[in-house]
Length: 330
Ligand code: UT7
Image (cartoon, rainbow, N blue to C red; front, side):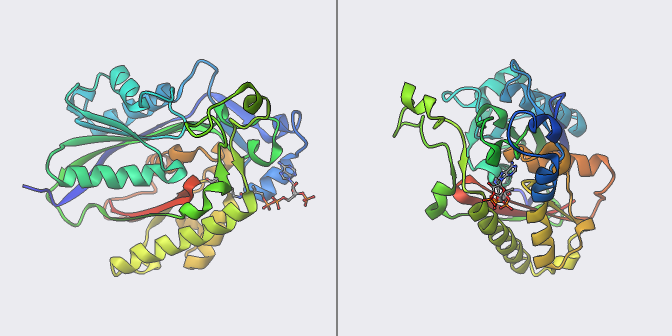
């Protein structure tokens, strides 16, 4: 029989030990701590060690989430990994992570690429799959090693991104008033060019020239992304609230994608919801793409900011441009 809802049983995150400060970056590109802080709110970011992969970070976050849930890898029958930086172009990072964690071979394992909205896309996908009654325990991970696809000579992008991983364990519940009560996903495919890696895909395989030109690194039109991000986050938040007959002031905590403090402040102003209802850790992590929302969720929980019965709004946007929101009754 199909279940009534999907609940989060445990959360976890992992951040690499290496902290890269704005002052350190200012020694390698023409920038300053002042510029980065005032334009983005970022003070520092974590950078994975050269031998530390996306799957390594994902495994660490997953172990923390499994321990928090009181489950083991043997209990998982669905693994979804939101990432744009899998260890290899082929196969999926999920299969590497499955093997490292010891998740059984009967588990469904796949990656989901929706960039910075990837965790919310994956949460909704896992929730629907659990809701089908065919899966019992899902592990959903958001993990990205953006330091591997950032052009460290390009000041307009390299100051914004970092590495990390966050994870949740999901299960079915008979209580329809708890858990993931809704999600809205969407994409502006007409804006693909605003944030992309131009070469290295099947349409344009990497060549010595494309590599010399740095076309295997992320390119972004920051100002345009900013405007569309604010619009998409505001609209998807309003949509999901309306769909569930809720007002913004009924939200206990918003867990937004951590790209830029000014984007979060703009969403706060549009929703007329004070900033103390928003989780902000972009100052310490920068933009970690798919890892951003689950890291913020785990930090908020561990800081005691989430209590039973609280209404949470998760909201994100990313390359694509994708966007998504989810409502969770804790
Ligand atoms: O998950 C999705 C990921 N992407 C995003 O979230 C990005 C969204 N966009 C943003 O966060 C902002 O647009 C940025 C932080 C990227 C840029 O902020 P901005 O206020 O839109 O600045 P800008 O692009 O208009 O640049 C202002 C000036 C320019 O100089 P001029 O033309 O005014 O002389 C830039 O060349 O700042 C210059 N600039 C820098 N200066 C020092 C650009 N990057 C830097 C830098 N340090 N790192």
